Length: 249
Image (cartoon, rainbow, N blue to C red; front, side):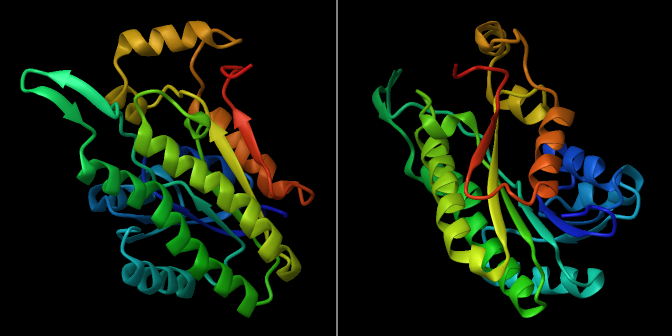
């Protein structure tokens, strides 16, 4: 897919990795639309990403997704790509021992983590795929996964959700391929980003960095570059690309 003039929607694209992806793609001539629940970040979007259009949306609400996606698509025109980036990093073991005795992973945290990281991907893709088929657009869906998809101790909900995201990459690539739509994933490792620092203690991040083959955390621009590769290479579909600095080797 040629990025020059392509209309690309990024969920959770008003800050963090999503914003960096938008910058990377906009630099190649793509027009960026953002669905994000952070209205303050959306208000700053025009200052941080020139020419981008943003709409406030809770992507865990299927009715909102349909309404707001249609609104954004109406402003932009044909949608050539969707990047399912919105996510929530949550860490908790299945069982732990606290001052009150034996504690179990909270059910509400499981449900919230699944809703943001997995359910939302389904909601947005079902709408985006309809737009692409109806407009006869050879589009691309990119699911942002994580190295946690293979299973991380202390991340039951997050790992399960990301594993589901990668399964959908394969499923949708098979289903949507005949419509001319490619589906692929990008699975970042631990990245030097505010969301990572907020969820993982600094001492643990230093340990993780020492265990990667390149001996450091990833950079947001490196994740953006991987997404760009997936979009531009028309032979990439049905697979998830690991961008983890060799953490899993």
